[in-house]
Image (cartoon, rainbow, N blue to C red):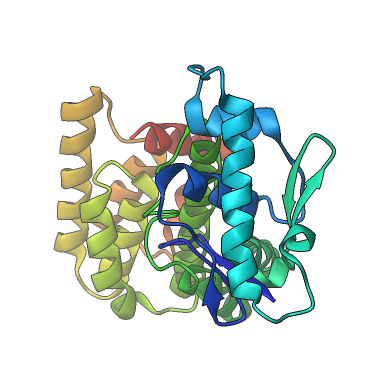
Length: 279
């Protein structure tokens, strides 16, 4: 059975045997086929990933050579299995397809758990949401495809997965805040805020966790660090949501979490996402 991991180091195995090549370009080809497992990837798309706009005259022939190399590695992994390499790495409709069940590709399993966790989060089932979203995050072992050279096509997949990962992380922390796990979250959020100094949601979550666990002055410091970073790097002030949260901490007001300070119709959230994505 084919097993693929892309959420960290790239691995491709059949049973206990690896068929992931070490050579750069064949590794790119297999990584792209793996991310699109059970879907046809056209030859032009594969060539764009490998060479971009600078296609050599021999691009089509060279791509076929890479596919043959991958099938040889796959044949060795299959060994005495009744399945043949060409039945796993299939030529189809002007392109190629790698057969693998969704549950055996960590990126597919991550997206499935992320969607399930998001539904339970929106439904207000915070215990289940925290558990499921935590399981999704647990599939990550480093940056996506961390040991694969990434071209223009793979880059889009990597960015998409990383964006989903950030959303899942934000939702899991929010679920834990609603469960009252403020003190437990402070170390994790302190690291996240330090790694992403202009990320308003992480700052708001950290401020909430600190304030609710008796660290109002530390919450105010977190706000000032964010404001300093935004003004210095982007020439922008924090969003109205952060300003209202800051004022609530200064005034000693009671609140459950940072989301109560969002602008009507999600305007602050939209401003937040565009800013933090750019960062």
